[in-house]
Length: 259
Image (cartoon, rainbow, N blue to C red; front, side):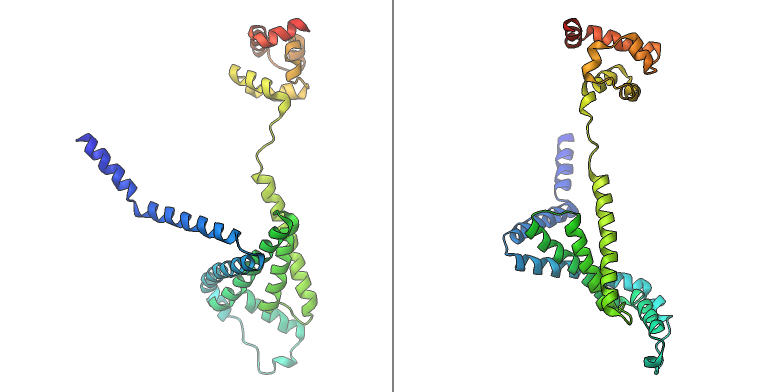
């Protein structure tokens, strides 16, 4: 009876539609990436740009539904808008662009994500790697195109295109560096591998900082004395345990004898 229930449970888990859908999606995604990697650069760039733009458009349309009410509160330009102060007119257009409805935001996000992904794809193929330089170039193109299509150009469109591109590039460069910093695993200190293992076995790992402060590395373990441990402010009890461990450890005891 128990065996039948277990088999039924396994069968239910195996037939879980959500798990099957996720597995199918991953399979399709892997197949698509494998196919894309075999294509020429123009084809890969076009496909990546189109798919990323479609994703960006979907996100922008959703965001636009949230800001639609806000955009409706902005005044419409008067009939004599041409005679308005150019700076005031540019400010009004910028505010409308940033708080546009679903269509406006879908267009803006499609351009940003599509251009960014397309340039990144080309840079990766050409340079063979993804680094901060490639990321900043893609962000510059993204910011420049966003400035053009969103109406943020203002009276001096060329200067604003460059300014927007540089702003996007600097922000992306900073974010890339932060991402690298937090994604990299901590570097193992090779000078304290044996020391760390010894202290962990003795339950004294909190004293690793004392060893490092006194420059007592793995090579000095056979030479350790009570006074040396006292100099790095390790209490009497832990000192006794450490010295006893070194005395009992064949490798360290042999090194002590040879020294």
